[in-house]
Image 1 (cartoon, rainbow, N blue to C red):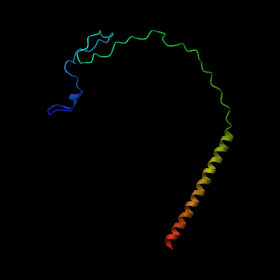
Image 2 (image 1 turned 180 degrees about the horizontal axis):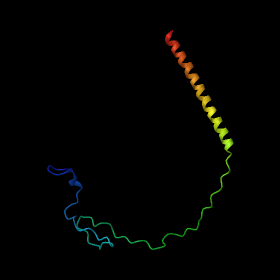
Image 3 (image 1 turned 45 degrees about the vertical axis):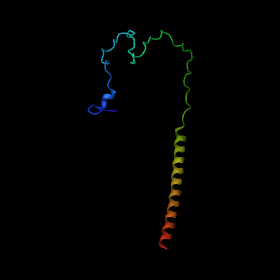
Image 4 (image 1 turned 90 degrees about the horizontal axis):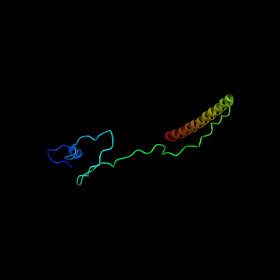
Length: 109
């Protein structure tokens, strides 16, 4: 979209006459007629009136108390889970070892 002798950024630069003074930051800009075929800018906005939100009447209930934890029972459950994990790993290891021995014995024979 560039022509010889122009930079690639020329496409994104504002057109002629767009280098006017910056808008006043103290209030909405006065309405000016839009130039023919140009962009007049966004319409002016007015702030919402104070108290426009509905009142909030719902209050959440206070949080419930959690039941006490039995630390000894938690430790026992964790130990049982660890033993089960080790047992499953040992069975899988033994099966893989047997399978490996079977495959190697087929190669040797």
